[in-house]
Length: 117
Image (cartoon, rainbow, N blue to C red):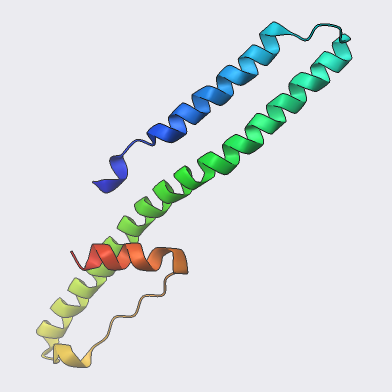
């Protein structure tokens, strides 16, 4: 199954962000008051989280699309097979029947690729 690939880059990035936050929390800042230090740590955390969401978002989005594409393609294939079986039982020519699936733009290429296999 193609969606079983682990996002190694995403995992490394998440580890880096966690390490950065840990270092900010444990090293402290010389010459700052406790409030200023907490604000600096919070700012670093928000910045790291923002960068992580932007960079990891694509990894998770692609994995989610891949899984959803497989489900959609499977459902479309199952419906086409069900229609073909129904048409044979009723004696209707297969060429006269159409199965329509409405997909979002993000799914079109992935579902097409899976159905053409």
